[in-house]
Image (tube, rainbow, N blue to C red):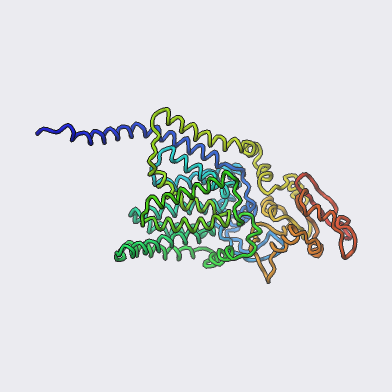
Length: 510
């Protein structure tokens, strides 16, 4: 039997393409490793979580006493207040890590978690190195709001969100094991961070959109959809397996509906730099082009999730990383289908050089803070985070304040974590605390930001710790009591002062 030579061409072409792919694979893996390495370096930030201290002490209490600390023992403002600590399982993890690897380790752990989030989000799509690099640039710039403080409970929540989205995509590919994984994931999530509620919303969007797609296509509901919906319902029940049961839902709703959230920086509208604004709009445009170009009804769940999370992102800077993580797998699919090829040594070298230069520039801009992090992690925490004073804290540990004091919101957690024997006035736990219509954060902002020094005087504080260059300190120095007619500083003695902190103690007999 004779064979036509032309009939062999397609087979030869396929074999040749396969051979070229095998030859290029090690090179692409090497370049992808460079991209991952550069991204890891870009994600290293000084550990600056304002809430580190109370997380640390709650974790210490759990491991020391063998039970969860449910009431407040660290402030005099609302002693004994019972609250829902939805991150109770994260606290012992932070305590162990902090005790063994300190602030430097927490910074590296946050960067490693961010890199894992990125990998989980893009791993389904077999991207070329330059495609991976493009998405890495978007991820590094737009996830900064979450990762810039190192390993914190919000970062753990983002990791769980990336796993959830990956499982949802795997379910759409026909992997039935996802049905069993969903309830386990949501049970763990509900004990680690309150963002599990957002995970349930995205999960529910996929279930509802699958139902709509089936109805549009005129198909009867298949068995897998009922299993999928059943897994969603079981996941809801699984979130109730926590020490606070349905209280975690009430706490999440309180966060959404609270009128004091605008006082907290991360819940305000994002204020992008010009470069980050361009990247955010470019990323949103990439998603929009992907939806329009693909025009697939099956993309409806991804589209709905993108719309919901983008709305959250433009209304709260805290949710910008959530938008990126929730949509990154779809963005990877869009970039992976791009008909742009980078082949040949010259073109490949140019692409690698441009990408490495981009990451190198990003690292160069943060060279000083990375050097500070390496030399003295604790000092870097104070300088780049709550702007606290190491010297003052060492002084207060030796000579603890006596009585009821006033401190700034950002320093409360650090004071608790450093083992200050005196109880604080306010800290990061208390943003939503309320008792008999009394909200300490409202009173705090009225006195500190609103300069209501008459209300401050009525509290009759025994000591005051504020930034030495704050507007509050300057207003207090000029204040004259309408009740006594005396200058306020006649009542106070300056016990400690440096470039960052001012520590005042009420004079005896006053």
